Length: 387
View 1 (cartoon, rainbow, N blue to C red):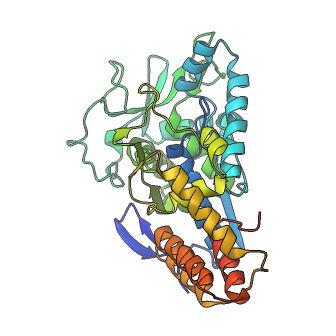
View 2: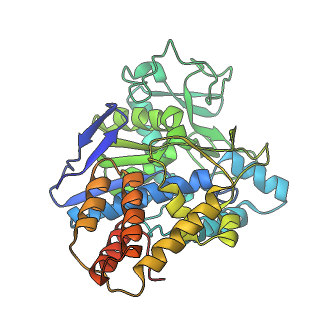
């Protein structure tokens, strides 16, 4: 069987073919650790966990890297507001993230790098961009020269003329073009900083992921993933700086999970409507949260309603009752049906429907082998019905 996945860069569903016959490399943008995990940023952890589980059925060696961003202006602001040392705040929220996504059934990544652990690699990448004419220094900053890359905008399909100056990219007088993005910025004494050829400072957000990905997986990877809100500018900028350094394609496939709103409103800290995974876990089994996320195709935006939690718990209870204490089996029509759904661009809603249909069939009198298939099929989706 083949795996088909939607590639954001080509806007088509493609047959997945890694560069190596047996090895797969996947890098997923993880959290910026300054707050608890809400359902919107927990969703990609589940989506890419399903993908990694699926890939490991096909390939001997799947190297999965999920980073932690622990140097960022939002972190600095949160630490200042909490009157807490930055390192303590980032350690606390990194541990909270790991605990929450593990509860959702997400496997540990092969490597979980932190931005602060890759400052030398970041500085080296910036030096190369300067040497090759793709970056410039200005008032203690180093900036990427967007006009030097004719392919900039290929992922988000935005031309330079169509991009709105200042849209998630800071407008500043020292920039040649408002669209140019920061690779290195100066740090005052109260902010995190490292010595560099451009003075004491800290990296910009985008260059961090390029450095971590290249260090862990090489200059070209098979899959790069993250939430849909990262397509522009984060992933667009990653492509530009990485490919301008190496002259090679940065990632063969780009995969993005849709966004989650709350009952008709965008989730945001300012509105106070974030649905935190840690709070949900106090109300329902975390397996039910995962089952609720499976009701929506990973590429689709959706709205989380308060009614989703009790309904998901009811569905999970139904599956657990149907599974009983049977032993999993290795073959069966239900297993094939779930595999087929996941192979087709991670169609989790179809896989979920098959599981619930099987539970109904068991209630209607199917025998123990069917129960074993249900347990095995659910495990393909990262749900252990025997807990």
